[in-house]
Length: 271
Image 1 (cartoon, rainbow, N blue to C red):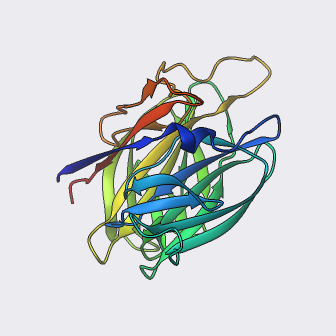
Image 2 (image 1 turned 60 degrees about the horizontal axis):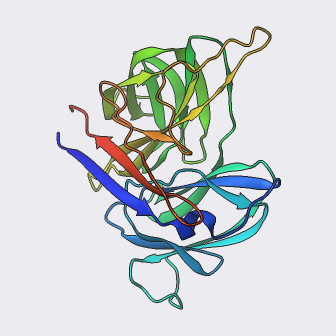
C-alpha cells in the first residue's frame, strides 16, 4: 500500500508566543482527522496555520495556567464558530498531548493525554496504545499475543518489551477480525512509543501515527536506558513503522524561537 509523508512548519511565534518560566508545562498537538485542514488558535491567537491530518507538533513549552483551544477550518475567520473547542488547565511540569480525532461514531473530538515518563530497565522499551479512530473496541496483539483487550477511545495503556523489532496488530475486541496490521515496529532501548490509530475504519481512512519520548532508567545502577543516538531535538521522534525509524527534524534559527520542520510518516500495512 502507498505511504503518505506530510510535512509542516511551526513558525517561531507559535513556540515563543507565551513566556514560560520555572512553572512551565509542555503540550504536543496531534491532528488525526482525515481530510480536514485546520487553523489552531490558542487563547484567541492563531498558532498553527494549515495544520493537516497526520501532523503533530514537537512539545511546546507554556507557562502553567488556563488556555482556550479552538480549531477552525483553514482560512476561516477568527470570529467564526470553531469546529472544536477545549479549555485546558496546565499545571507546572505537566506534559500533555492534545489529539484532534474522530470518535467511535466518526464525529470530530479533542482528547487530552498525560505523557507520563515510564521507568525502564536497561535494554527495554515501552509502547502506549491510544485509540483515536472511528473504530469498535479493539484488542492489541504484540508478537501474536493478545497484550491489550477491549480498548475503547478512553484507553491509554502501556507495556514494556525488549528493544528490537516486534509485530503489532489490531483486531475487533474478542475476535480475530483484523482491522489493522500486522506492522513491524522497531523499538529502541530507553524509548517510549505512543501509538495512535487515527481515521475511520468505515470510511477506509484508517492510519497509524507514532511518536516517541525518552523514558527514565531504573535505579539504582544509573545505567543509561537510551543508547540509540536518535534523540530528537526539542521534540518527539516521528518515523516509519515498518523497518525502523526515519526522523526528519531540521532546526533553523529564529528571533525568539526555532522554526521546526517536522515529518510524520504513515505506513499502510499489507492486508
